[in-house]
Image (cartoon, rainbow, N blue to C red):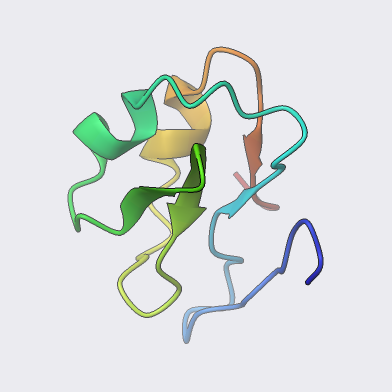
Length: 72
C-alpha cells in the first residue's frame, strides 16, 4: 500500500493526503476536520477520501507538515 494517495474531488482540488512517515498521531487534524473525514489507523492519521471536502484545515493544523494537498 502506498504511503500517500492523491485523490481529486469534483472541484479539481486534491484531497488531503497523510505522509505516514512524518505523522506524529497528535490528533490535531481529527479535532479540526469539519466533515469528520480524519481518523487514526495503526497510530497514524487517515483521510476518508469519500468525506474529505478539500478544505485544507487539517493541512494548516498539522504541526509537522505530514498532511498535504496541492493548490492550497
